[in-house]
Length: 207
Image (cartoon, rainbow, N blue to C red; front, top):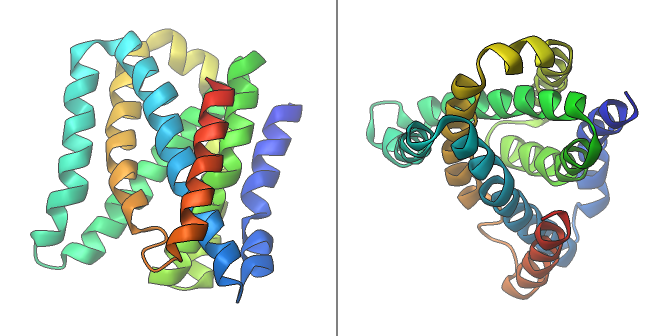
């Protein structure tokens, strides 16, 4: 339960962290570089291998489909809007799986807690820049609610459908990897690079 409360708090403090960074381009660049690399690294180092372990090759197919959706949906009519909905759905799926990870406890639970900080900050900054603060806040609230649902439904869902969950988490990971490319597009390169180094350090620590 402690890990769950900390993860929910990590989502809640994202707007406050962003407000502290506001107007400080170097700090914003560092935060964007850190969030981008740490989240992508954790998806590739933890989420994708776990999905492959649970579901085998269909999980890899799901990962490719998720990446293809993120890359290709922009070419459709109203593609930008559709891409935002796909990204939001992928994020919510990931939040539900995070809730299940928190219920598992141990190292996995604390890994979820630590990676929720950059996930929450990235979610807030990307959504606020493309929509507004209200939309970003609602998305974070939705993530919190889905995380709670995943936490309380974890034992039943994981016991009955581990292969399905593995496929879903890889599908979500693929879509989220594309979304992360939009973070820090105009950030100072030096600050973003140092943030990326810190992100790699976090991934190595948790691995």
